[in-house]
Amino acid sequence: MFRNLSSRLLSLSSLLLLGALLGTLFVPGTLPPAGMESSQFFYFLPLVGLLTLLAVLGTPVATPRSATGFRLGDSLVVALGLYAALRGASGGALPRIGVWNYLLLTVFYLDLRLCFSLGTQRDRRRLLSGLILLFLLVGLAQEIIALRQLYGYGLSNHARFRVTGTFHNPAPLGGFLALVSGIALDRIARLGRPLARYLGWRGWSPKLLLLPGFWIFGLSGLFLLGVLLLLPATQSRIAWLGALTALLIVGWEPLVRPLRRWLRERKWVVWVLVPLAGLVLVGGTTAAYRMKARSADGRLLMWKTTLRMVADRPWDGVGPGRFAGVYGDYQAAWLSSPHASDGERQVAGSSGAAFNDYLQLAAELGLPGLLLMVAALFFAFRGFRRRWRSGGCGFAAALAALSVFAAASYPLQLLSFRILWTMLVAVGIGGLYDARPVAGVRAGDRIGSGVVLGFCLVVSALSFWTAWPLRRTYAAWGRLEPLYRMERFETVAADYERLAPALGAEPSFLFEWANVRNKVGDPTGSIAILERAAGLSSDPMLYNLLGNDYRALGDYPSAERAYLRAWAVVPGRLYPLYLLTDLYRESGQEDRMRAMGRRVLEFDERVSSPAVREMRARVRKWLE
Picture 1: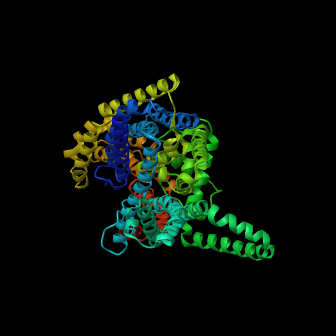
Picture 2: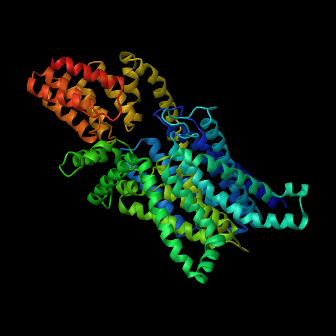
Picture 3: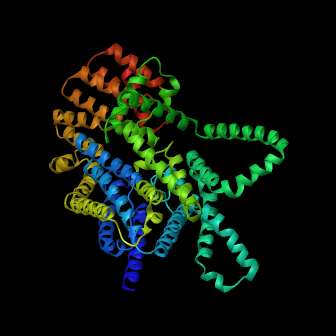
């Protein structure tokens, strides 16, 4: 009896911790750099430690009655996490919290596999229902926040977009809604018929309110209603496709299979429906493209450029943390060549992501890293297929929606989505279904569980020892930023020097530090910092500032090369051309100044602004 009570308490504790981990989506970005990643990391770290402690406490309760059954799929996930962490640590381009991010996600996965094996079969079924409920509740909370934003009762997290939920822009919100819609659709499909039969036999009864299925069915329906209202507002076409994928997976058995049998008996209908379906597909694809054509063209350019990176380094990749810097070099080289089109030059940007997580993974870790991820997904979906009716269908639809969304966006660059991916893969590969009741546990299972627990304990303890103190460092950086924006550079110079050893792989910090060095009269020191930052970021402002440093030293040829490099990576921006005009004026190159000034005045800027008008006014004055 005591063991049963203990196993139930451990299962309940696991569920509460999983709810807290899903709460990562609601952690605001209070620490620099811009976004929520660093704040969410320091929220995630202690929760993983607690989950590890729970696994340690629960193992003596679980092992006499169940075996965890680690298998090949688990090894693939662990290998992917450790390989990424090792490459990030050895390359020196990934911030320290980025390396710990990979390590803690690996520990999180192993903790999930251990905690999912706790208790009896009934306890695991309850944990499955609780996990489904958690996804629905978190989804509904996101919808409430987003609906408040949509109707003007709350502020979004981005000035250009009305609806973002707790994310930085609408696209991740759309991807998350598509993910949870897979679980909600499955619950509607699985619980609708039993509830209808119950109502048909007994009619309405207050006892219906005591059925957990009734509440899960109701929450699923309420969530899907919110999806219909909010998913179009996100304007994320790939999120729409992810939601459609989830719908097809859930609806395949109850809808598509009967439809196929019906069509076999009425073949003439096929000849009518197939052309209509083709027209709808072509029309829908065309409309989706034209809705945000520049965005689609920009992503095609990013994918082509990333594929060139993969082709040049297919086996080892450029390393985690170096994608943005190397990408900027490749894009600048391509757009400077005669083979690039004017359309590509107009839509080029300086994003730090490939907007395709699979291509970015291949570019950073090489094809071996991509194969590890694809193989892990294969084993997860195979696990879902084996338990299709016991919850596997909904989780498979959720993971499929996320996988589709990752093909044209960047969810797996965000910690919150990495947590979701890890949870879904853990459930698929083994998770809630894998622990098998046995009379006695084999010695190999005991040893394997002991090794896994030891690894998780060591990594969790080291993270508290080395990574948790970094929170004070990021907080100190956050306290410097108001003074930096007030241009009190002399005041903050020494503080930036003090923080540099811990934050030397943060591109935003390096840019600020270099600018401080420039303003306090140390352009040589600023150049050294910017050359490091240029290997981590594709932001053309790094080269603009680098050109300013060379100008301050009187090295006009190097300044010219820096400004041209800034313009080459994003030819749609006017500022580098303006700086070149000013450089030619200062260095006495009258003819080149006038030629570049005319380009500035004739330049077709995508977005006009007071700064653009001011630059053009100055150029006109110089040309008079």
